[in-house]
Length: 62
Image (cartoon, rainbow, N blue to C red; front, top):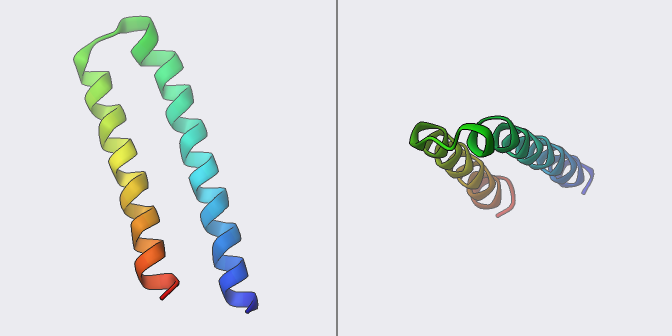
């Protein structure tokens, strides 16, 4: 169906952009400073991405 294909494309774009932002954040903050707070923020962002992917899998694609 066209609607699920659009949802797949939007989810792929969202995940791609979010992982690019995470990699940029890692390169800017975590590698340069190496503090614990930046690592916690990175884990929280990764958790949000995984929850969004699980939400798409559970509710958009039954």
